[in-house]
Image (cartoon, rainbow, N blue to C red; front, top):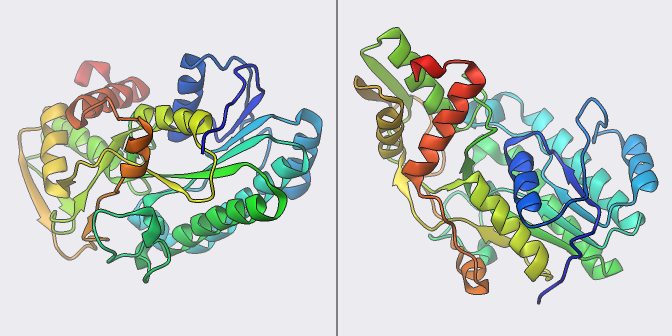
Length: 318
């Protein structure tokens, strides 16, 4: 089912400063959407129900893209599960409800591939949601995102609200979080290999066995897919957004080391958790609509490393 969106619509991008939100703003501008509405966390706390309600009542955006979320890697999810479930539920509830209450014509909710069961069949189809236990290391975040999907579906069913959901695979690229402990795998590896190169370290040790298979999508490709869905999709079921290409974590580490210029040894640490053994999204539904990713992994890693260097002020060492 298709759905047109007016290029003159007022589009609120929640979470515009993050990895996903900043890419969405770039993609919307490229697509000709000139009226973007954004607020920083300091300007609008999306966990504050009254503040969110007042914001929507004042601005009444035509389109809402909900990219704001508390996110992090395995260690962050394991350390702060209460924060992950509370903050994400609050953000979703406040934004989706206020958007509907104030006449929003279209809402896109962004989730994550971690919503699927740990051991579900591969590649992962949309229909596999809620067919088995979740990966324990990020269960709190996954449950919140599942609730967001179900909230969009409930508001569509009861109120006729045109709320759709997209579930991207693992994302990376400009604007990522390079925190040494709380980041996702690609930015964490970029930082660790860069620091090892600068310090002259002989070895970098990666978490786990290095054998888990993962799919990585460049964030600007994901953003283009979201604009595509806004303009071409209006239905009940969520949509997977991936590239349908996978590699092992060890292969990823080798690719990052090559891009960064680290020529030392790469070791694994089997005492650390691997997480889900394989996670490949089936993006056939999206591909059948006519969308395809454009940026390959090596090219994307080069762009991501360039972004890291620019943000660290480390251009001369890159």
